[in-house]
View 1 (cartoon, rainbow, N blue to C red):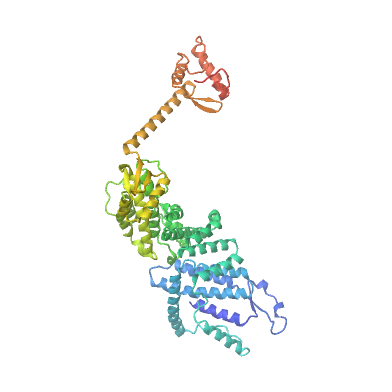
View 2 (cartoon, rainbow, N blue to C red):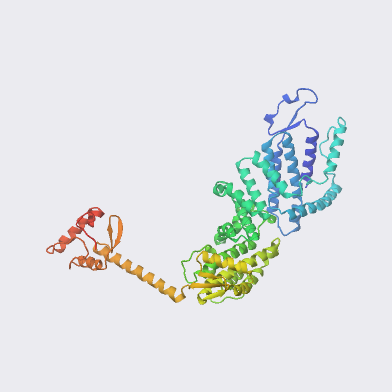
Length: 588
């Protein structure tokens, strides 16, 4: 806090004296700037405001990383963020007056890191709270020492009118964050445009990710998705630093949550499936140190290096909410597939992690009442497969993560509508084989859906060939034309396929022993042979006779001559070895 006030005094001095110029090194100092009239005197001093503000921002972030987030000290430290942003804005303004646009872009990137994760409502509340707390702290500091007066004495006697004008300007800017607008979107657009215009490639990519994160937080999923797809950041994220990759993972997580809040569950699965399938979600989001194998003790240097990569606690994404969103979206996508193929283990799997979780629960001998998120999702899945949408919806809404979401009631209403539709689909896929005709009115009453939604859902299933049936418009019912196979019929078909595969495998093994094939080849095309070819190959191998179509060996040759002939055939090309190039060779 003292450093921030001292720096404000330094900034006032630089603004009051535009002839003062700061140079990065002493070698850049020259005596040429002192020549000229009194109004054009250029005074040069060694110093670099850019390195100062970057060092100050790094130290502030490090102080948040190494402070316990559950203490009042952490909350007090957060109140200094507004002062830090004000100092950064003063530096940006000073560089813009000197027409140093690269430094302006670098300072804008620093400010953007403190704004992109905020919501509009939280931003306004944070500003108002910081104003109240800053007044208290400023009064307390002023009692100990007058920090508002600059340490360096200015030429007050030579130019008293300039000092009075500066004081009037400072009165209009009572609080350090007065330059920040209450409209967070406008402020974000301002800083992002500066970085995209004057920043380097890395700064531009990071600014785009911050913009996408900001849009996702405010439920503008379509715009955020279009920006990240058109920029192709997902293709080049591997060449950037670890901090950039962490920000990219955080953006993906926030995109998935935004899609979940809007009811776009397919997009939720695309964004969160790979991220949540990893056991190192906390490490990928920089919200926890990696777990050491064999409980090895960490060195202090290693622990400090790991903590320096973590995000501050107030920027964390709730992992329970992330897991619940991913599992609920995967459940809504997998339940119709499970209902359509209840006995097929080779069915198309969209979420391997979700199916692995189901297999784990199904292998348990005893399951108690649901306690955590995974228990609730598994119980809801079993209820939804039976068409009981009320029980499934009740289990999901019983999760405590809904209290952490903004506008949770709207999200629950969207989720309830989707639960009804998926329960209807699962019910028709599983139990349509027991019906000859199903009334649309009965389905509408059973699943509490309007008749038009029932009609569109069933028609879509017919179009996708999920069920075979037709609408009887006068009667208002669905005529089921073909039933799905029962479990016994499905197991019989699986047994027949395996028996056929076993027979083909035995034929190939037997033909390999005899030097022939169970299937014939003719001009590069596969031609299945007659059943007699099996006995023909066997007779050739046993020297009884030849009925398989191969060249007939003389009956007088002995066993040794046969072995010699086979060795000669192995040395010839494959086509000549089996007589494929001989026109007299025929396949039956």
